[in-house]
Structures are given as C-alpha cells and as structure tokens.
Length: 90
Image 1 (cartoon, rainbow, N blue to C red):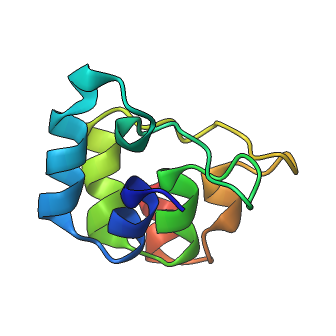
Image 2: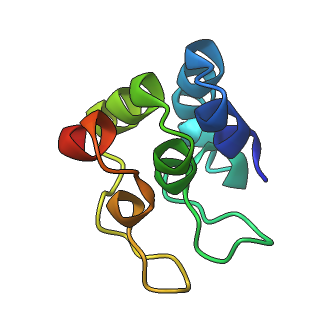
C-alpha cells in the first residue's frame, strides 16, 4: 500500500492533506487515483469505502477523487461500501 492508502484507511486527515499538498511533485504516493498493489486497481477511495472511513471519503470527494474508477475486477469504490450511510454518502 502507498502512504495515501494507509492515510485513507485510518482517516489521517493531516497525512492526506500533506500527501495531496505535495502532489505537485508528481510522486506516486501523492496521487488520489493511484492504484495500490497487490490489490489491482484499488485507489484510496476504494480503501476508504471498504473500511467505511466517512471522513476520508468526504475529504477525498472534496479533492475530486473518482467514485466510478473501477479496480481490476470491475468494481468501483461504491461497490465496496456496505449498505447504509457510507453508500448513501457516495
């Protein structure tokens, strides 16, 4: 996992903000759409949805993270969210 994925998983706003703020460097760790290996195509939004991290999802949405980007299995982030408030948010 990249630093962005771990930050989304644990809803670490300061880390997410730092990583997005340094996106101008174009390093792989800073891109919100960057897939993570060994989970093909999983973005930070996928991880946040899977672990129901509402604050991380809201922040990533504010930064224009894609909701419809499919992983290698054809599943978008909303497909990983459990039914309820997180799925309705997305």
